[in-house]
Image (cartoon, rainbow, N blue to C red; front, side, top):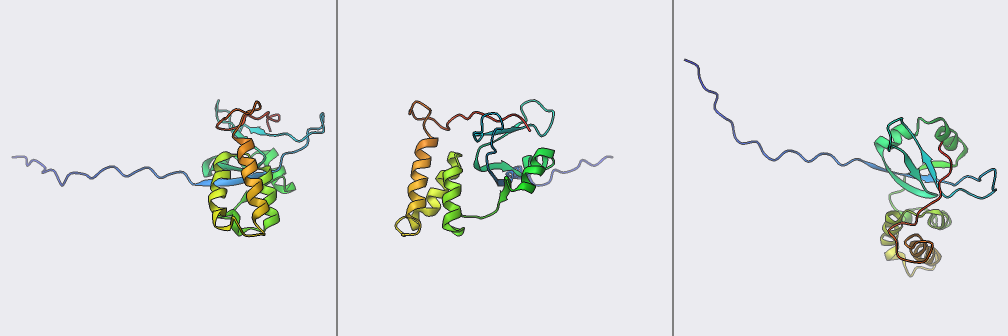
Length: 165
C-alpha cells in the first residue's frame, strides 16, 4: 500500500523580489566638436538588445547596478571614467559633501527625482548661511527641469542627445 504524502503547512507568501540596487553616476557633458557647445545628454547602447540604451543627463543620473555593470565595460565609458568626465557618486547625502561641490552638482543635474531628494536632505540646512546659495540653486533647478521649453509643467524636460558612445 502506498502512503500518501501529507501536505506540510501551507507555504507562506512568495518572497518579494529584491529591489535592484541603484547607483548614482555623475556625467559631465562633453563639448561637441562641431558646435563647440556642451551636449545636454548622452545615449549609450551597452548591448545589442533594442530599447536597452541608457540615457545620461549632465550631473547625477540614477541607474541600476545591472545597468552599471554593462555600462562600465563600454570603451567610451572607460575613457570618460579615466578622464574624470564620468564618476560614481557615492555620498549618501548632498549635505555631506563640500558646499562648492554641492552647488556644482545642483547646477548641472536635471534628474527631477534626484533634485527633489536633495531638497529634502537640505531642508534642515535651509537657513544655514553656507547652504543658502545651494538651496536657492536647487529651487531654481527644480523649476527649470520640471517645465518644458514653453514654460508649461512637465515631468522632465526633454533633452537633445549626443551621438551614441
